[in-house]
Length: 231
Image: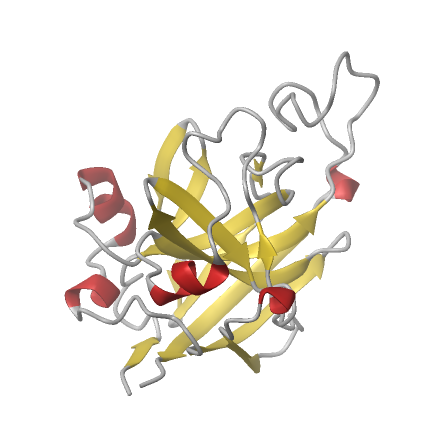
């Protein structure tokens, strides 16, 4: 078995923050060996209905490929890719030691795994197993079981089908070669005021304002991430 451990004692190790569709990656603040994911977080509308829904991205790790200059500047050396850890996440166990304070608005802290299949990025959220967030550190382990009943496929919004889509879970888990994310999901952004048109065709938070109370707010600190890969 291979085991990946990141305790953030020597920088972000390749983990970073995704700002939005229009800006590059950004650095995550680290203090006392813990990375801090501070809201407000962007409402990612790339998977709006008819896709699997909206999400808020807290932190991300690229799992394969050479990092671009902006990613290296934001995330530092990627210890996952440098260590040549597996991209087969089938039955891998992911353990996070987490604390924080949230106004969750119905969301849960969740794992997102993304792989590329036939040129399409397919993302699956492990909604059947989520991570507790309490004021004191707690440790939670989730298992990447190849059971679609434990996951939600993100698919794509109406105009991003050339980039995103649904591919079989087993295929994606066997080669998570794009990235993994820690996210808040499911997010239900509520328009502030009247809007002209379908809110899912428009871009929540960009084409129209949304009520802050309808999305997750707060902060999450993570001081250890461990991935135990199956044989």
